[in-house]
Every structure is written in C-alpha cells, then in structure tokens.
Image 1 (cartoon, rainbow over the protein chains, first blue to last red):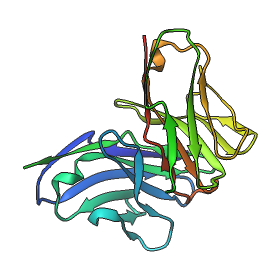
Image 2: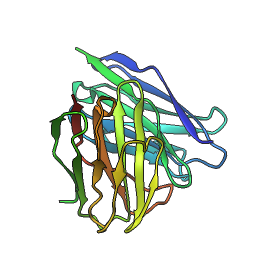
Image 3: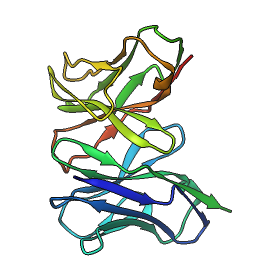
Image 4: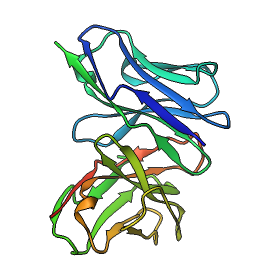
Length: 111
Length: 114
C-alpha cells in the first residue's frame, strides 16, 4: 500500500539558511509524488510534483525536490529561506484512486 | 479566475443540527473530494466523486454524506453533527482521477460543533 512519512512535525531554520524537509514514501508501483504548501488560513497549493520524468523537480518560490528511488525519498529543499516560506508543507503520493497525504511539517523561519 | 469556493468559511453549530457545506469549482473538473484536517493527523479524505452521480467513501466517511448532481458542485452534509466532527474541512478538485493530476483546494471551512 502507498504511504508517506514526513520526518519532523516542526522544523525551524534561520532566514537565509538551507531549508530541508524530509519525505519518505512506500509504493508498490512507480509513484507519483507531490509537495503541497499551506499558508496560514489558506487551502493547500501545489509546490511541485514528480511524474517519472526528471528526478530533480523544480517548483514555485525557489523550491525543488529530488526523487531517489534507492532511498524511497522525495525531500524538499530551498537554498535560502525567506520569512514568507513560513507555512505547513505536505508530501503526498497517489495510488489508483486516491491521494495520500503525509501528516505535514510546519516550517518556522527565525529572523 | 479558476478556483474552488467553499461556504461558509466559519461555522459554529450545536450537536444534532443538520448542516451543509457547499463546494463549487469553475474549472470543469471531473474529480472532487472532501478532506478534514486535524492537528497531528494531516489531511484525511472523507468522500470523493469521480464524476456526476458517482461518489465513494474515503478513509473517514462516518457521519457525512455527499451528493454530486452537477459537475461543478459537491456539497458535504452533516445530518447530525457531533463534537468529534469539529475540524477544518477542505474541498478539492482535479481535472480527472489520474495519479499525476494536481489537486486544487478551496480555502477551507472551520467547523465547531458544541
């Protein structure tokens, strides 16, 4: 069965520092993987998705993620954090008829 | 503007009083779904619909009903709300029920059941 695990329910980084949010997946078939972001008082919006093309996927707002099959990982990174990146981030994997979300990681940006 | 709208955005009600949360999308999407978001549990799917008149249970359907009479609308009905249904609810839609499709989310409805 497909599932995702996000390591760390809260992550704090200083402004300007590297952002790394971890996601590991399990899937019995080649996965489709997503990162969504939820800003305060808003719905989720797509950051980026992996659909079996390039393993390094670039998304909006300077984020990117790398699909690593050997590690069953799809970690989200950004070289330099901004205050506006403070939000909750969800990794997700799809199976035949549903999308399965991780429990989310709240990113805090320290001035 | 392409969007998913939900109403109301905030709702306080009492146990047992029937309520409906509306959801509408203007993107001609076939697939629509409802989620609830609770702290530490992430998003859990309540119901989904692959097209008009086609609905199915998600992971946490108990206490909820849905209908899909028109392509654009997918209301969520709580016939007898209970306090454990206090949550943040999201409607979402996608072009089709294909694994690579992007989900588009509404702004959320925050429900408090007293």
